[in-house]
Length: 370
Image 1: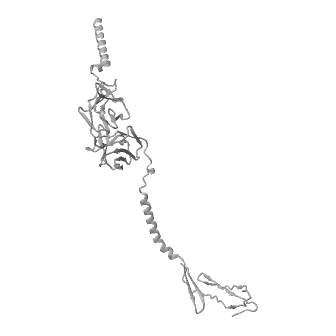
Image 2: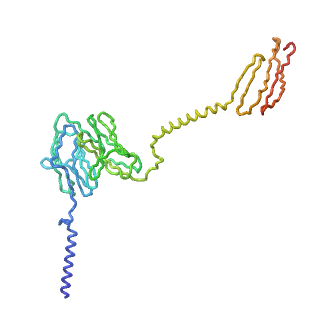
Image 3: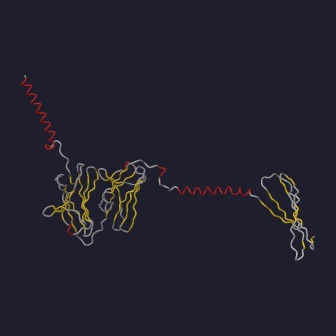
């Protein structure tokens, strides 16, 4: 009995050891295969260019999410590594967590650049190498090439509710060019104008324009990678990615810098002021004091009639006459100082007081007056 129990225990230990071995070394048995990096250059890719033209080779890559370094080589007797120079640049853009595109860019291609090119993964990450990309450089008059000049690694940040503009500079051949926009998901999905989004382009010269993607009020859902590209048939180029990050607190709507309503406000204010002046001016004119001066030649009198608004009706106002007698003085005598005798006759008429002042002169010796 004890022997059978010992055999059973021994068998259980063997199973446990086998299970542990499978867990540790199962990847080598194909039970838990490692992630593989795939180089997606299409078989038979063929590019042509004329001397002096810009040329870009693309190498799409699917990876496992870890950083991947893509290298380039050119076929001679073997594939010889290519390194960046003044005329050659090597870049790569991550379009999603598990996908990127490597670029080999010739700023001005020459006949010596003709040949077969391949991309591959840095040693230790993968042993794969891509299909060949055939490049042919020939011709004296190269076709014009459209260039999308978005800088590599462009990064924009904004808070929710802010206005945000993405720019895509374009060099073209002088013919009309239509620039489109897309946003990276599993693939680059086209973007179309909406209430909160507008797409415009403005020419800065005969061969250069800037395409703009404007968000009037950006939201967290707008975060992601954006690219611009040329309408099909004009060019097959696509720009580097523009990364947009939307985070932070929404700005206070009261601080919005949209002041397009100001002209309408001032126009309405001016109209209201004009209407107020038209309504109020007759009232002010009616309340103003009116003065009428009359002259009676028969009695050599100046009569002043003052009309004061809002007084109760009254009879004719007393008239006071100021008589000026002719005064004759000798040519060597001075004008006497008048003696002012003030006789105040107060008359109260309906709450109004009137007074009269008589001027009397005393002639000096030798003078007389009538």
